[in-house]
Image 1 (cartoon, rainbow, N blue to C red):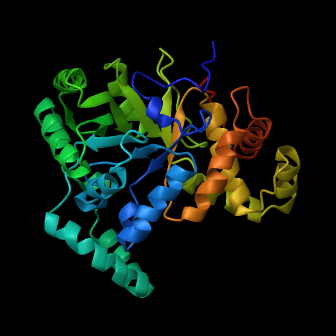
Image 2: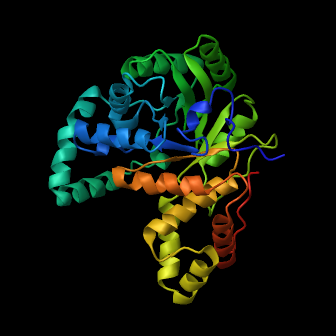
Length: 338
């Protein structure tokens, strides 16, 4: 039986929902420290809350270790209004780098050429996951990381605690991690815990850790097939990559653009409308779960929430038509989560 979107996606996960029960959105904070001033960062978080989003997703290593403290400032006096999810397993670099990033961001904002140069240099150094050293995830690391996170956040609990992006070659002491996370739940320091990252490794681990929530990349071109127990998921990576691919397809095929627009009732030549359809499709496909989205532009949040509200629990006709257009033109079959 289909689970209503007005229910939580697991024990202790009511924090995923905004002021309106049908806003199944979380705000991803991975890019928060890209804003060069505290005032702008706090305004962005405030706009997310104002628009009805109250789940804030971050990780110990976001912002070179500075993002948790930034969200902690925002959470003061609001802790009962918001949910906080953080992650462990990827450690930030030196605290000196975290303190230096704000002036560096400001310099890059003023000098776009410098930003492009630094990005090219980072790419040349080969910093991708394929070149990294294997990570180890264990219970002691989970406890230690959580204590650090709680101090940075200025709170005595987090709503969700995720194993952060385990991948091939990593050493995951799953039984030890499970035991530690269950102890943290029993102690009241964590409300729920889970596994977050790329689908294949995370789904494999979650299958062996039944209580775990699942937060995974869930693009329309690579839709997630859920666990046999039907466990719902939180999706991320919904818009950016698929948007670029679909835009490239439609810009070169005016007939397809007209056909898609007629089918969905939306102008798919408009980037904002196309992004909204991707979000609606993800929520329609995953009706018992939620979505985490990120932006550094406060003005984008209102239309995002409006799009999310269009994805009702009985199905979204425009989203279904959009899914059919993608399936027809790209020869894929997105899987409905149910």
